[in-house]
Image (cartoon, rainbow, N blue to C red; front, side, top):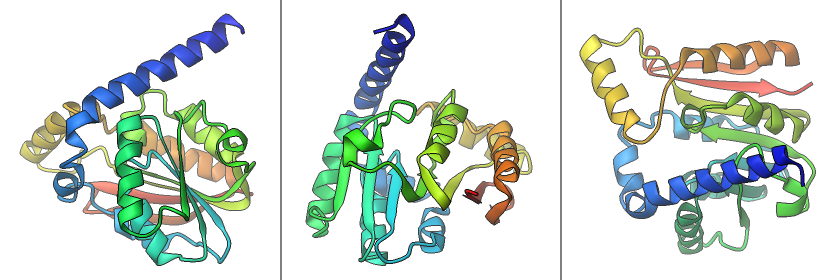
Length: 225
């Protein structure tokens, strides 16, 4: 193993430990509290162009809240979820079982850069991959999206819903929200949305482009060539 590979594995293991510590107790109230400010998640799920038999992957699936909704929305799809935190995956597995989807939705532990779909699920490509309020938690987010695009089938959709930069918000709301998000290592950055648009242009454009709440969040869908 090269030093570079070892460093990457160490970084992934460190991220997993940090997320397990952060969410060990939060996971029990996560869905109750986040519904007030993770706006647009259902809009993303409702807009995903999922055909019967299509393969759909959520990167950073957390408690499984989105996977449960998606499983009911598209009963003929093959659905997969990945998260770096083992405690979140345990919570997601229980949520899926309660919803009667435990046999349909498959889960795996991995970070974005180190995710190997062949090893995890026996798949090389997915028809749809989405990130729901995840990229603002990843300092080096760009390689994660680039890898997801590599794992997307030709003509497939990569969708992102995440916080906007909040520059259009009243100063008090911006300070309050950004201060709260920092407690959970969430850092909205204007360059994420900007660079996603540049990546979409390289692929041929956006399949969907929506502003949520006057710049509070954005919903983008990139169609791979």
